[in-house]
Length: 251
View 1 (spheres, rainbow, N blue to C red):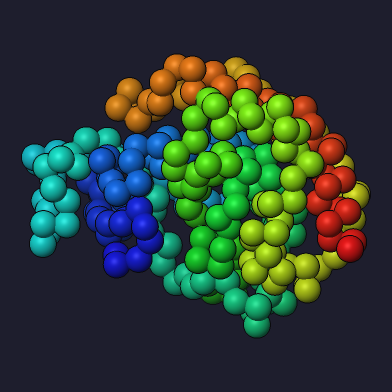
View 2 (cartoon, one colour; view 1 turned 60 degrees about the vertical axis):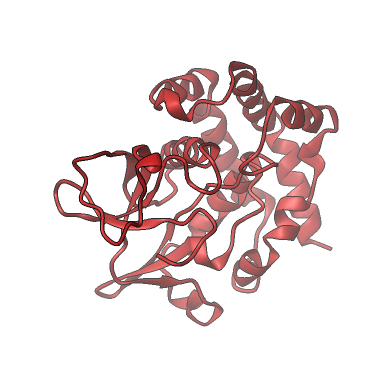
């Protein structure tokens, strides 16, 4: 597709549905596939709109054009259904978006997964008849250290109480600013969402999602355990995270 450091490929699945694929052994390694799948499943759990996504297999039966995938990249990849009639989010169309209130969830979700890579290119507007709706894509670079996180960085983050960090809101300020200029955010906007996140993102859910992934994507067991602990720690401190967000916005 000639864009993105993960070098995504345009493809079609067995039903000829257009999809975007991030391959095994891509330039950013296998953690981006793990990140994408885990965050996709969590986003769907909290009702964040995303194109249908999942695990795909590229092998010797796959038709490859222009050598865009090498045999070293055969194996399980992550796919996301291609969105027809979609465009990158722009400030000028914010007032026309019917579901822009979903931003409250996106903002909180980005803080739970420590996503500092949210930009206009991974928040798309899909045009369908008279409806303009937001669709979220791309969670390849999350969990603080993005494509190279491990147990050490996660444990250090918990020790340093990173739930008080403003890095997420600061590093995503270009995209977030579009919403802040067009809608107000108050404590009450987070009240129901906090309960939703607490009820749906649990240890059992996290372990079940991870168990569904190919073994080829798996980081070491110590890193997985640290990530589960880290995400539950973020959920445990969701009140503090909301206060940090609101305090930063009010400055």
